[in-house]
Amino acid sequence: EGKHAKETMSINKSLSSLTDVFSALAQQSSHIPFRNSKLTYLLQPCLSNNGKTLMIVNISPTEASVQESMCSLRFASEVAKVELGRPKRGIQEVRKKEQNSSTSKNRRGARNEV
Image (cartoon, rainbow, N blue to C red; front, side, top):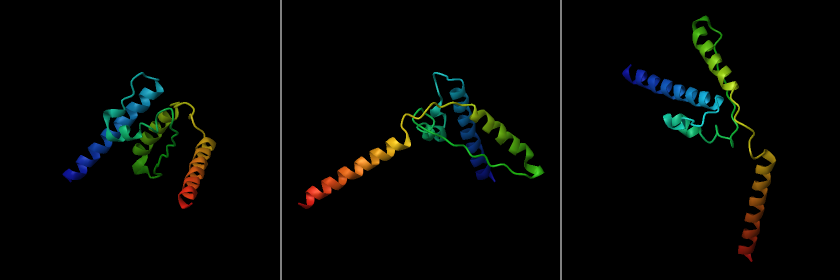
């Protein structure tokens, strides 16, 4: 039971830190607290200008879960207001870069065989 409570506290701290990050992003604050938890630190590249994110919220239709579902929906509503900006690289650019990379590897491999 003590281990479960400790894990729950850790999850809640990470989610609270994530909320702080989204709040700072929404306000376009000069300081974004990415280092407040391991979760937000790991998500920093995804939540910066070069990233693109998708949030999926899982809610329960049961009456016993109404409170938790409403809390999840409020969080998702706040997150949806955050504008991260346009990604700097498009999918076509990434694909083109991958193609160029594989082409140059094939050329190097062919030279080594000669």
